[in-house]
Amino acid sequence: MGGLTGSLQIALQSLLADQGALEVTGNNISNANTPGYSRQTPVLVEEPSISEGRLVFGEGVGLQQVQSVRDNVLELQLNQETGTQSQLNGYMGGMNQVATVFNETQGAGLQNVISQFFNSFQQLSTSPTDATLRQAVLTAGQNLATAFNQASTSLGQTTAVLNQSVVQDVSQVNQLTSQIAALNPQIAGAQATGQSTGALVDQRTELIRQLSGLIDTSVTDAGNGNVTVSTADGTPLVVGNQSFALTAQLDNQTAMQHVFSQGTDITRSIQSGDLAGLIQARDQGVAGAQTNLDNLAAAITSSVNAQQAQGYDLSGNSGVALFTGSSGSTIALANNLLPSQIAASSDGTPGSNGNAVALANLQSAAIVNGQNPGDFYSNFVAGIGNQVSTTTAQQTAVGLVLTQLQNQRTNLSGVSLDEEAAHLQMYQNAYNASAQVVAAINTLTQATINMVAGA
Image 1 (cartoon, rainbow, N blue to C red):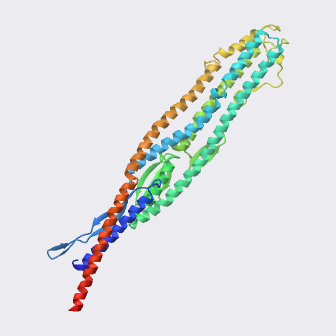
Image 2: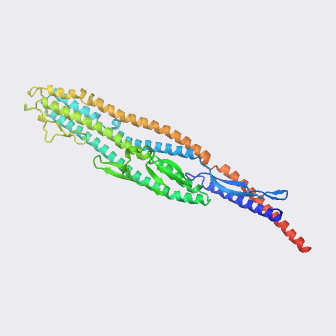
Image 3: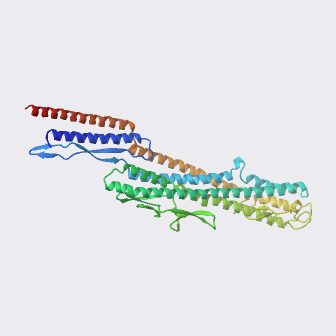
């Protein structure tokens, strides 16, 4: 409408719009360092004009909405790379523990005790009736069995830690999905009534990012402000206001914690996130090392016992088993074995050293999957080192990609304090100008009233 009243209405609308824009700018500045915050922008629009005869009057400006600046595709890429990085970190944590068990440079591992054990037979062959050298064989055998036992125990402890971490991750997944499900109806309700949903969507986006760090996620816009979250293979995690809790259950046969969803075992289908890394380290890295350790222990015990049986002890009796057990955890020196029972002789005479030499030669014999014990052990330890090295390289590569994506998000959705300061000045100037218009209209209105009263 025209006249002073119309002008006053336009000025008042401008004051309200600029005040809202100032509040948005202040909110951006206060959240400049808030994780997951997306910069908000006030959307100012020209109000529809009105016509009076041949005249057209503008109706000023209005604050239509407050809009958050975000790129949903970029957010999905960040979720994916976050999941990949967390998967590598989880796997690396387990493999570092495995590598520590077989760290030859720091005095751990089996290379030295294996060599000392077979070398003790070589020493015995120089004087097969020497009681001290015979006792040295038993001592070396005990050291070998103890080293195998300790390595197996350490791997078992690593498995236990990884199992516990799986349980903890499942609990965190359930907490996050519950929070996401609670936000869905809040966002839908706010959207339906025309309220700003930026802060709620930011919270949900940040929760989904944290969830992606634990388990692979697929996010689908369900409409009306809701999102559906599932794993990559379609296992539902959040649908509307409902979350579907995962459970960790111990497999009595393997003593491994498995992950279930509504009664279905999804352990093998988890593709990324910390859970995937933990499961991969446990079921492949640690289990593979344990298998190799057991194969090596079984090969040494069976070969040594078989060769012992081919010789004779100091009394001329056939050699008895030197070891019991057939795995890293069960290998042990035979109970009550006497030094005199070492079967060094190949013909039954006390001075014969033929079988002691044969026992020593097992060190270079292909008794473990076509390899001698030292080579087999070196190769499987080198394999662990290669896995750690490869994973480290992958961590670096994924880290660079993730940093690049985070920088892109910062450039798009992050808050620039310099830019916001400029906006603050701009909206403040506009607000002050509108206030001056109100003051001018007030003066004109008062003058008009005085003129009418004076007439």
